[in-house]
Length: 229
Length: 134
Image 1 (cartoon, rainbow over the protein chains, first blue to last red):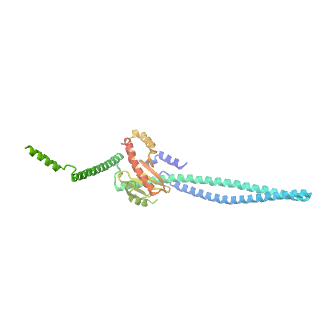
Image 2 (tube, rainbow over the protein chains, first blue to last red; image 1 turned 30 degrees about the horizontal axis):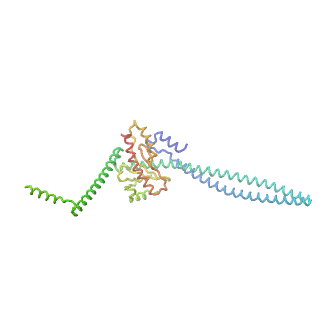
Image 3 (spheres, chains in turn orange, purple; image 1 turned 180 degrees about the horizontal axis):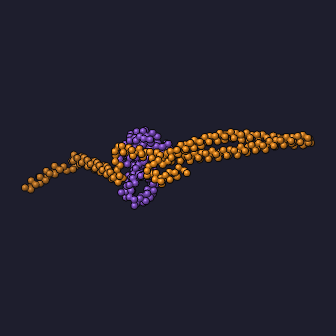
């Protein structure tokens, strides 16, 4: 049963609620061992692969050499027959026969090497996939354990520091209040800034005599009222 | 990934307009608590395994869930998993969480980005799911 299945079973069985450690303590060790063994296996397979490949190359060379020998001797037979020397032709033909037997042997060796190589390559591939899968499962275990322990550490930390775990709605309220306050402050600051800008602009206009100063209009009003009397 | 180094990096950082406050929680598994300025109620907890860096935000617990609409809530969480960038809903013991997992070889900037995204997603998730909570 894969780790994910085990974790799922444990959760359904209530382990999540009690906060129990979900995975068997040995599991980590077992996976790590399997990964280690698989890696060793791959190394051995690769070593074998190297030597069998070398054997195959050697067999191929011998095959070639024997084939060339046969071809050469076949030519000698032709020549001997042309000369009418049957005895010589027969002697060379015997040699060819032996060579052909060798050829067969060498071909068998070559093919057997090729076969062996394919098997070893398949083994290496299978082992690599196994490692990948084991690492994935190990990852699951370690993550689950990590989160479990981290949560304990955090809870303990809360308990010891005496802070109250506030509920979600209250938390949201506080955050929103703070955001609102910040926005209001920002808005106020912007308004203040534009007020100041307005005021300083007003001052400049007054200085330039462009805008009517409050005091001069009061004088004008007084004059007007005096004139009435 | 050394959590202590990560902690220093966060503290000195002012990236994407955020500021961070870090606290290192020792234990059998080391945890780094990162508090994002403005989101003090939802710290992000970072821990590491051989292959992953896990960032987790705790949202609410089982006893805050309205039982009648729980199935609907769970379906909503499943539906929202893909739209939420770099984060997914999950459950650890009796707490519902949002988490993100990164490769152990991630750059520090990637981790920071994950943390800020988680923070933003958490607040949004709380808003969206609030009707399902007591």
